[in-house]
Image 1 (tube, rainbow, N blue to C red):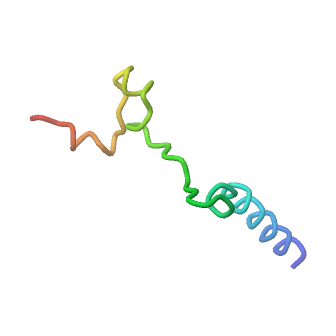
Image 2 (image 1 turned 120 degrees about the horizontal axis):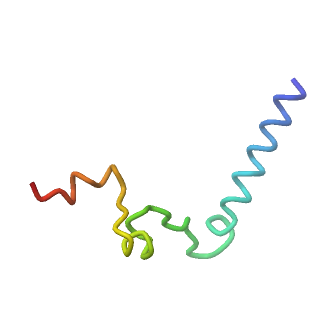
Length: 58
């Protein structure tokens, strides 16, 4: 039981720390980490496998 409470506490702490910008900054939101929004990935021609059907011209 102690282990379960410890795990729940640690997960709650992790979610809170990951969401500091979202929860505590007015107008805050999670950063977009998708491949197509990264300029360096686009420059190198690297795309997301899930988006391939959107970019396929065949």
